[in-house]
Image (cartoon, rainbow, N blue to C red; front, side, top):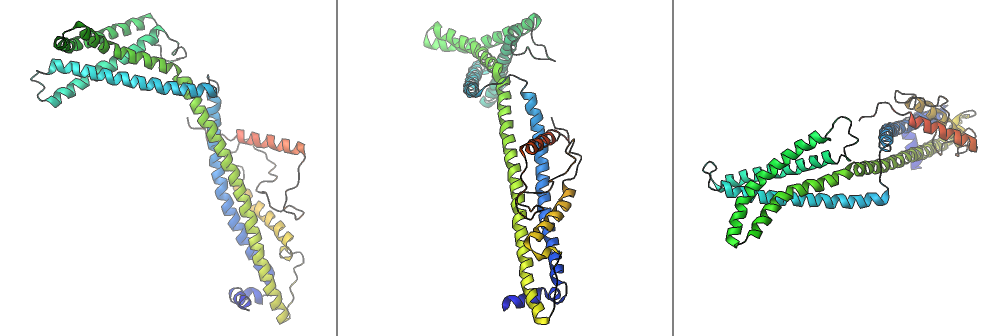
Length: 377
C-alpha cells in the first residue's frame, strides 16, 4: 500500500500517461547511460595516462637493455659490495678530515688573525676538507688516466692519456706535500711527548695515505656503478610496468562490473514501475502495449543499453592525437565483459583461436604505437 502510494507521489505523471512505461523506461535508460558513460570516461582517461607512461617506460627500457646488465645473483652481490665500499670511503674521508684538522690547528693555534677557538677550528676544518677532498678527487682522476677502463665509453670527455696523467700526478704530489707539511708539526708534538719516532711516521703516513685510499676505493666503486645503476633502473621500470598492467586490468574489471551492476539496478527500477503501472492501468481501464519497445523484457533492455552505451562511449574512445596506427574497425570498442550481445545473453561471443591471435596482434601494435605525446627524457 505504502509502496503504491509512494510511486503515485513520485511518478504520478508517468502513471497517468498512456505511454507511461515507455516514457519512464526512456528516462531510466538515459540516466543509466549518462552514469556509466561518465564513469567509463574517467577510467578511460586514467588508462590513457597510464598507457602514455607505459610507452615512456618501454622506450627507456629498450635504451637500457642495450647496455651491460647484471643477473639477479650478481645484482644483489654487487649491491652489498657497493654499500660496503661506500661506507669504507666515508670512513676514510672522515678520518682524513679529522687528522688534517688537528694537524692544521697545531699551526694556527697562535695566529692572532684568527681570534677565538671556534674560528680556529672552523678554519682548520675548512682547510682539512680542501686537502682531503682534493686528494680524493685527484687520486681518482689519476687512476682513471692511467687505467681508463671505466671511461673508455666516454664520447665527449677525454680524461685519459699521458698528459692528463702527468697533470693529475703533479697535482697529487702538491696535495701530499701540503698534507705532509701540516701533519709533520702535529706528529712532532705527539712524538716528543711519547718519546718515539714510530708515532711520528705513523701519523704522517696515515695523514698522507687516507685521501689516497679514499680515492682508490671510490674509483673501484665507480667502475661498477654504471652497470649497477642501469640494472637497478631497469628492475624499477619492469616493476612499474607490471604495476601499470595490473592497474589497467583492475580499471577494466571495475568498468565492466560498474556497467553490469547499474544495468541490473536500472532494470529493477523499470520493472518495479511496470508493476505499479500495470496495477494503475487495470484500475483505470488503460492498456499500454510494449510491443517492439525495450521495456518489454530484460533481454531487450540489455540489448538497447549495450547499443546506446557503445554509441556514447565511441566519442570517448575515438581516435585521438595520441593514437597512431590503431585498428580502424572499432569492433568491440566500448563493450565490456558482461555486457549483453545481440542474442540477449550476457556472455561475449566466443572467438576462434585465429581471431584471438589477430586481436592480440592488433592490441600489441596499438600499445606499441602509443607514443604521443613524445616521451619526456
